[in-house]
Length: 312
Image (cartoon, rainbow, N blue to C red; front, side):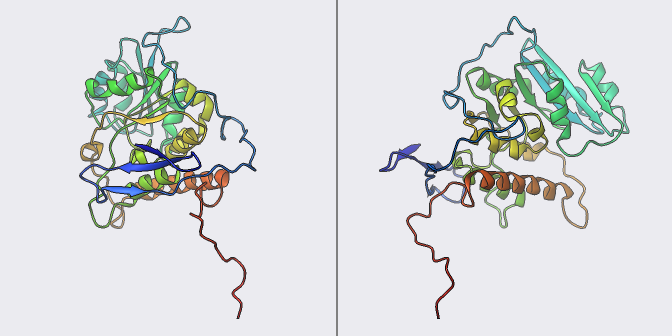
């Protein structure tokens, strides 16, 4: 729910579900800096704001005359021969005009053969590409107007994937899984905490812990053209760049993928991937503060800060 302050600028009131430890939280509002010029940059930086982007524009649910594919499903996979076939079979039924692209990298099993047999277009690489690099490679090869991102080890029924496609057709540009992670634990997992913090700093506390780090999520070709391919290698960065550029970022159907994800082997008692994901969020925060200032555009709430040396 939105409320307007005296100056007319929006204040975010965050709404929590019963699983959250705060029922309500008021956040400081962001005042625009009138001295700053609009941000103009290349494809891998912040794009110019497009008129009407916040409200979104309805997109056709049928393929355009320019191409037959409406939906491109992108699935990075490594050693996922046991699940990749089922993932692809569900993905192929999200829309009648769908292509499935599997980016198979560094596998030592039959992932590529199983994926091809299931009807996917397979892009194979002999060595691991790095975390989330496959998303960028898959997006570069995609021809659909809507890009849906999945993982090769989590089978999600097609009926639960369709709301993501429908949301983009209705005008959204980035559609996130309405899953926020367990926040009632002590301590909170650093990845869950990073997602919430980034959304608050992005002035989108309403998103909670929803993040492009998790699947499923979908983006429009418009978002891809505005933000660029490279930020897809760091999903939190793509997300925050989309928000700052004025694209419409929403959550839809919630899927508790945390419970469906197979536990990763720990190294020295720690999840090796957690530090990578947290660093991606820190990089996104660094980008945000570089664009909007050290306080990410938030005000001091009329507090006067003494920055001079303390007088003795």
